[in-house]
Image (cartoon, rainbow, N blue to C red; front, top):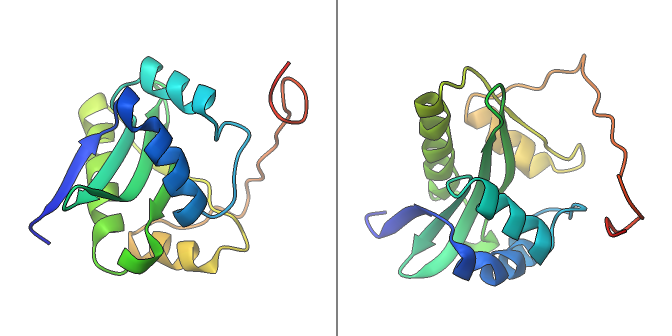
Length: 146
């Protein structure tokens, strides 16, 4: 896939990314809105990584590093472009970023019901840690707004 371009998202990409997630990502999060993604890119301009093929957005991953842990979110590949190495290329870019920043281990949040994603993460060398459970609490109203 010689035409695949991997790059960091910029402010001009955010609406396209949000529309892409509605089509290619499984589920939504409290932060999946313009304000949330804008804050991410503003705070860490290299965290949101895009894959483009012939100028079209075909994949994303968020490679968030807080100085201590490496977190992967929103690995999404266009449904018609899956199983062509796009997800692997995005994960390679994310992992290289983490190593460059001094990260030691990547972790990903994967919906239990998303078996396709679970297979993809296993194929990439990740394994579930069944001993952990995620605990969440919204800081504001149900939709994330005050």
